[in-house]
Image (tube, rainbow, N blue to C red):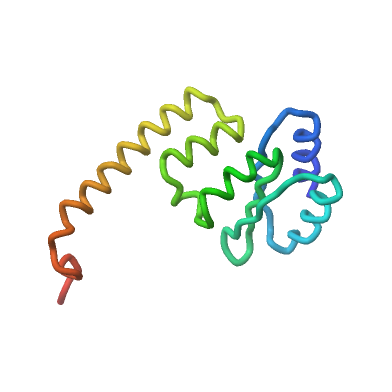
Length: 128
């Protein structure tokens, strides 16, 4: 919870517009109390049964993350991933490189799916 307190401090001092904080789900109620006590907008997403991600900070930034839907971070589109990285304050040049790499993979996967769409359902499954 000390790291959460530090993230709240950084947000309140203007060092961050958006924070992504991962913690054990058992601390959710305490984290919510702290954020609400400080009048900070937040969004909670479950990672698994034991962990949660809390996005908090500027209301507009939290709203943007909300607009991405309730999906895991690894399911974000290249564009969503890029936007999130920029809002979290990651290096812009590195985010551009990451976007281009993810976009290429995303397009290859989409093309493969289109190429295989003519096959009957289940025809790629192994048998025997």
